[in-house]
Amino acid sequence: MKKIAEQYEISDRGLSKACKKMQIPVPYSGYWNRVIAGNPEPKPILGPLPTGYIGPLKCTLRERPTGFKTKKKSKDRAGLEFPGPSVTSIPESLGDPHPMVEAVKSHLEGKQPDNSGRMKNILVSDPGFLDIRVSPESLSRALRAYDMIVKTCEGKGYRLQTNIGESFFEVDGELIKIRLYEKLSKKRAPGSFDFEGHTLEPSGLLVFEYLNNWSRRHWDERKGYDLSYYLDSIVNGLREESARVNEERERVRLEEEREREFEKNKEKRRAEAIREAELMKYAIRLTDRWHLANRMRKFIDAMESKRKAEGSLDLHRIATFDRVRALIDWLDPTVGNNSKTLELLDPDTMEILDDFMRSRYKDIWRTL
Image (cartoon, rainbow, N blue to C red; front, side):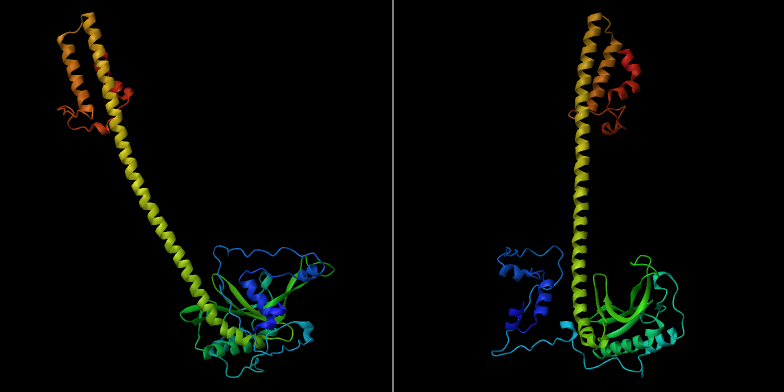
């Protein structure tokens, strides 16, 4: 990372962050020591991005000018890199505050901290105000920091809005939810060597963050670095966040549209399947009628032959057999003869099981 950073206009830490965002594997800490010791490991393969990946797909690096010499890193602050201070800082006093900041100041000054749950030492603004959650000791500095951020953002054309306890900046038509709160620190219970049964206390360090339905981006204060050090990043990040939210919203919209289209096609296929099933049921009914008609014809022929052999085939039974054959022709879909006595009935609506026929026409069966 250091060698590549010397060639391009980027720090080794910045290059590492870029690789992390784009999910590019990089050598871990101690990798090159293993190489020097003769224990190299195989180079990992750059796999495909995971499904639903949201992030940069391209990183452009500019080469440093010829003869450029990198500055020696300062050993101050234990070698940590922090963003340099912006041209402004948190004002020492709240002069000519923003109307929304003034409203929060008037509302929270003198108000007792909330005693509910883990947030018992935190002040929470009521609906209609800026979303700010700080202890009474940090209220003054938090209001000055909020005032600085709001005025700077409005100077860039970002309009501040509030709605039922939430605060937003409107950027390019997108609402970016914002919040300023004080971090909590854990305090061990008396006589305890771990944090079991701990309590939470305000730490005095402020956090400013963006929130939306898909992500959270925040700037944390640390010793010697207040929110003024991150002011430029906070302000410039709003437009980036707006573009990212818009991109995510478009992605969700396209997914929902594909889902609706899938459900629409699914319903269409289901309707077609139902129509096919109805046609199949109709064909099954016709087939059953045809089979039943053939079975009944064989039965009537067998009964007629039996009566003839017994010598009991009189005119009444001959007429009955003829009438049953006419009814069978009415039932058979391949014949489809009309029946004056059954013209108001539809053969397809009749149950064509044998037990139905026997129960309905038992007198005829007994006579035959």
